[in-house]
Length: 497
Length: 110
Image 1 (cartoon, each protein chain N blue to C red):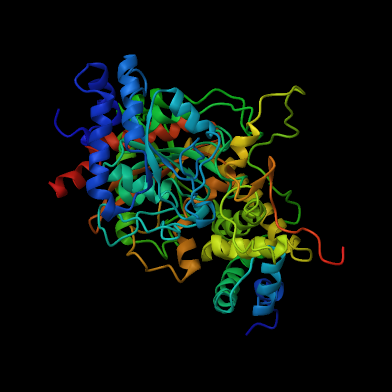
Image 2 (cartoon, rainbow over the protein chains, first blue to last red):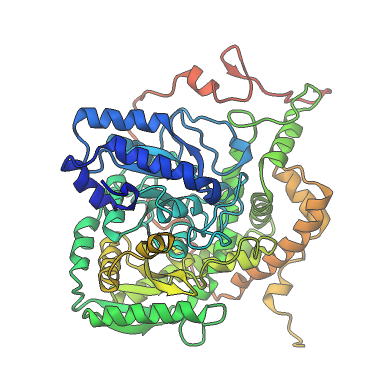
């Protein structure tokens, strides 16, 4: 067959089940491309190599390749623990660690017969919007190597957009699936909080973290979503409800008929009076996408969610607070590195030295900020107040969803920015999450779907839906994708050719 | 200048080097002098920005701790297999006699 790395998950499934190729061939094609391209791109922190080929050979021998996801190569963000496979969460503090168990989503993908290509780069402990906070190396955007791929799941976004994997998993705490997907021309979905297991996902902010798919097409993302979703007794916040029928919704949406669907355009996210900080080109592409939805029969109206303007300050109190607590487990005693244990220091000194050398600057900043926001005397003014604002944001969603079926906005206020442009300005980095934070705080599902280019760089449309109505996100995204024709990443491949 | 202080400047003090050093100590985080200088400036700016939450009128609003309204999720009180001890200790920075080996935990006078 021609270039196997150019095929979608659906196309690979068909080629595998028709016997036109094998899992070994598909896996080798991706490993070869990783070997050729990843030195420049930096998408992977660990590549499975021979182990992946052995695994693919087993799937071929079993004769199941092409059934469901069997034989499909996948990449996992390095935040998921994988049995026996190095897992760092982008941090030096876990350098060299090989976890003794699999995250539930990693186990589900393994049980489905997928082949793990490797672990993808990320901002350390998923804290960042550019993947520059990786302790190992930055990841480059395949559309322009001098630009960031988004974050924190930037290794996954570059791997899939750059055809170094057919599909990948990311995690999204405040936008870390959707924003990198938008900035690299991918489909990225943050499922309803609680609908995909967090067991074995190295915790950043437990009330917000959620795993989801990143793919080149809506249907590809839906296929992986259904494979990883569902109740997990090992995650106490897991919802005991059926996985939304997102594959069916993606197929239905691709028909292009949205008759009767009510779409709300969020005024506070790039609408009238709220355009400061947004690229004009981003707003144009999003407006065109909204027009496409209208053309497909949707009823479009503007909706106001006044509390969304407070999502950013609320998030940057809640997430660091939970992080400061979660990251207490990295103390150099049970796993990971240990620094300064020469017999002269007590345990507190060794912990402090280990954390000093093991954590990077953004992680330290957030631990300190979170420690402050949770401390006696400041708790009510900061963390407590942020939790109440979280309630206001959730109420805005409830009110909006009384009138409309989905809400739309830009996914990111800007296109991908140059590497280094925001590294010394935390607030400028945080502003990248402006549009994605409300859905995170309310726990509702949201997808980013490509809606064209601005300045030659991808733009994403965000579609948000009520909790457990993930299928609406996929339906609308598929309609946008169908109206625009070929996947946006096809244009990246044409450029390279 | 307004005579009323705005809520986000009135309600919190700026974070200085000493505050950062104290918070870092509480979080078991050794920080260098250079980091103290850098973080004091950066975190002061971040704190000013996040203090905007204090502008919201939330007098009768209950806090949201979690997006999913689940409480007291319990499992059946039965034992289930756990990871083998040696497998867990293999990932530890130091182990001895089937246990984690840790630095001294009590002071000399204890």
